[in-house]
Image 1 (cartoon, rainbow, N blue to C red):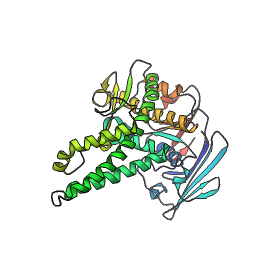
Image 2 (cartoon, one colour):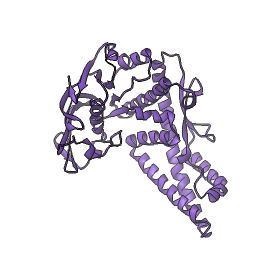
Image 3 (tube, helix red, strand yellow):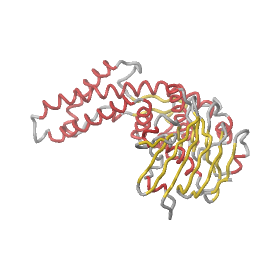
Image 4 (cartoon, rainbow, N blue to C red):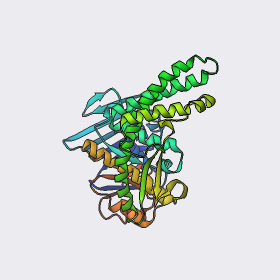
Length: 365
């Protein structure tokens, strides 16, 4: 997967720019609030996913303007393609090779990218919900069946919790609870099974990537946090039986607390450096390196499954990294196209090959 050019018109603070990309590393540098992240955001929107900044469509239109347009020319393993997204009058029009699409979701599978932004440090620093969201988002993009299993699990969880809240008023609901326990266990087993398979592959890729970032001086590991699962190759059937048993054991507590206290909605990832928790004891640079390793590991999995190498979009990734880790990012991420933003122009001088672009006031040079 390779971007040939990206064009923005009236997008955020950018009036009009066109960037002709190189196959390797493309560095976009400049002071804060000049438009660096806006370029990466525009590229990311062509994956068919929502903005990684949580922005809504009206936010993309430059203040005082009525229409915003972004265009992407890119190539996959078979041919060159072009896509365009137009924001106007509270509507969004999406085109792929001049063919109108119903929504940007139909772009999924046409262009692959992986985004790293400072917000992804929450993968390491914040609570389990961020790490579960990372897992679920990655799996939903790759496996539509996982999205169905996850939706079924959330539905079962919601119904089960509703019954638990009303049990003290309607004891006859105990019989209904048994039915939802079975549904809960089946969907839980499906969700956990896919998560375990994904983490097994992600662990291998991200471990090697982190080793390169740290010059093989630190050992990185990521694993699925489940005390009752010692075998990551456990079958769906055994997971289903295990989940049913856990629900029975937890029922007394569930009734007292009126909520489901066990299940994949309580699971987490253990992320460690040299067998020590990265969240509790990792430095800022180590935590950033961990998040980057996970995102680049995600990229490798997409490549393995689809045959396409995603474009790496790295926003403000250099901050809080020492020079050796920065050098790895600038010069040792191979076999993929990279778009990277930074503020310090001295970092650009260490780029051995590629292209650099200075952005100032929404204009690119």
